[in-house]
Length: 332
Image (cartoon, rainbow, N blue to C red; front, side, top):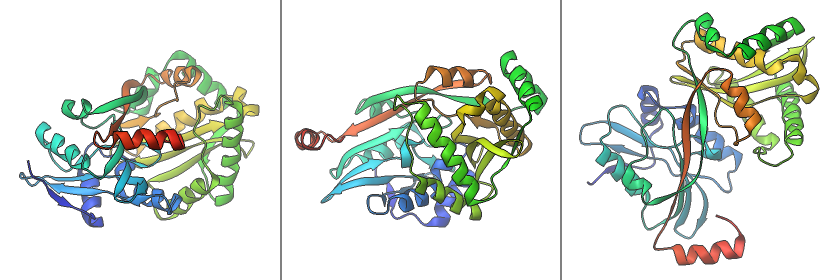
């Protein structure tokens, strides 16, 4: 089928679709695109396109390029390997979804990476057949379909016990109030990177957290850094992105010296309490780098687990060139 393509995408068009799509996440909004472009303006370019289907349904496919060689593009559905795929303000038939992805697989696409959206439609089987499954691991969605006491009652007994003990220990939760408090949290995150020394955690530069703070000043309802305190000292925190139906945990940890105070059980539970109060349907713990201890902790909240795949398309026409490039640079 022929598609009516819009590129670039008007900002109001994109915002309207993101607001009306029931499976859009923060990573499908112009905000995440803007953060990506400011995080690395030399390497990242906006490749987002829109489609108006014959039914009148409007579709937006957020996408960036991370490298270019002449007309050839290395594409990612979203920045920092977060949830990808398209969003739409109405139903998209399977053959239409296939045609949308086929538009991406044109002669200029060197490679394309896409990560499943746990709330969105699955990648069409015909498209899966053209891609390799790079890896998969579960994400953990806590359903917020009842009041807090009901949701809390579903948690494993260990989680409920640790939460209450953490409160007795004096753990408190509040929103970060300044760039300096973001910086304090970043130091705690650096401690976590050192603690998980196997290198399986993504390492982010301070500049990215500084951008989150700057954007949070204009979008305080969408970007929140919750900090966890003991005697008013910040000892942990979690960065949450809010959009549509889901509150998504992007980065969270506590300093090793305070883990025994049950900082995380209190912090995550109170964030969930707030998300219920604000009407969100899901709290997404996100993936865990396949770290067993982290996965075990998240399961204590009685989440629904959903498999998340990273898919990679490699141009069949450019594969000989790809092999030479990979051998020379070690990059994929």
